[in-house]
Amino acid sequence: MTRLVRGADGRMWTVRSQIEWRNPSTDADFEHDVSGGQGPGVLMLAIVIGMGVILVAWTPPEVVVPAWLIVALVLVFLFFPVRWAVRRPWLVAAESKKTEELPPERWVGSVRGFLTVRNEVANVARKIEMYSLPDLDGPLQPVD
Image (cartoon, rainbow, N blue to C red; front, top):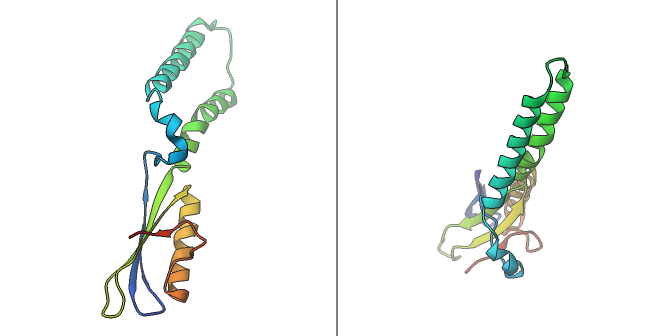
């Protein structure tokens, strides 16, 4: 998502957001840097698929499985991957160009969730239009 916004002082700002596929590392998360990687998740997925295949293979032919049960199981299995995709962190940046009077500025922050990032980009654009800068109390912070 990219927006061009004219600030109250006449500068043009570019407000953009980009999805982050990896969680940004912070100083508070140092103990998680030595995680096992993707191996445990792949192993658990293989075990669940194997158990599902065994369950279907051992089911007697007389058993009638209702369609709503299959749909419910698919929804349960899809809940966590969909939640993971929707709750990814987004990098939000607001950048201004250099003018005769003012130097260029860059504000960067992280927002979690697709709907939240849309709302935050709209708020940043509105604050720039009104005050010529993003909100200091928001997720964006100035970068030198």
